[in-house]
Image (tube, rainbow, N blue to C red):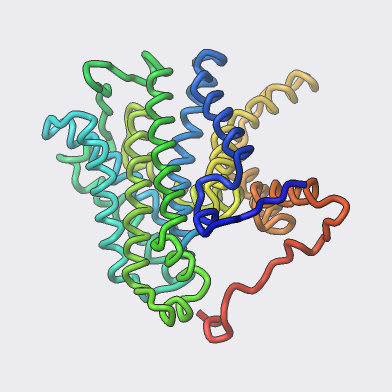
Length: 366
């Protein structure tokens, strides 16, 4: 059993709990860096897809898991980041190193602007408002055909950084390393936000807006900042998603993507960076697992392959229902329970992780 002794206030905001944890993360980083030399191009593309989903998941996690604000419209900000990145390169001739962060900034400003009129909304009402934004952005992409290409879409240009060309199909290893660098940057930003007074104000708003206001937190400003940072990260994921797809249109960022993002962080584990990555692994590899299972069943029973429409969505929905019923804390929550059991055995108690009410009686009907 590991006991962590805190001898200073700085220990509460350290990046890692102890040296052993830092060592494990260093080993994981080393594995990720050499991954292109260990797997083929197809699996490397799937790993890149998981990293992009994880970046988008961290963006939504900051808003939903850290600040407690529901959103069903983050596909709109994926689209804003994607289109802004490509248009800045094609129309203004900006290099990727400028268009990419500017795309995130544009998506962040759009999210902060959305937070201003929706600051007083809570729960399902806020989710409906963000859903309306996603539908509106979808229609704007179609209407603004001279700029966005409409339903025909746009082609993402080849990324060029200091004369080095990066293309998902020509050199997937370079695109993987670029995506990994962005994912690590987002993890670093997210982790430092968690440790900062801003992150603590986000958590206060999530737990109780009344208590947060009583402690001097500007709730409206905290929500606006949370929306802005969350959508900026999501915009970066959208820019990478456009380069990953190669060609995209309004259907690439439909409402299903917003719902998938929300379900992803719930399955992975709300309120943690790990949950975004676990959920991304489920979303990224679920289609391949279904395809492999279908091939195995057809070979084992001698049947022809049958394509069932909506099978992937149905299985993902069943997974979500199972987690809500049996493990509301998600995959990362289950790992926390396993780790606590191993560390505290034989003193582990089953009700250590009993869910507590996170609202005041005055907020129960919100």
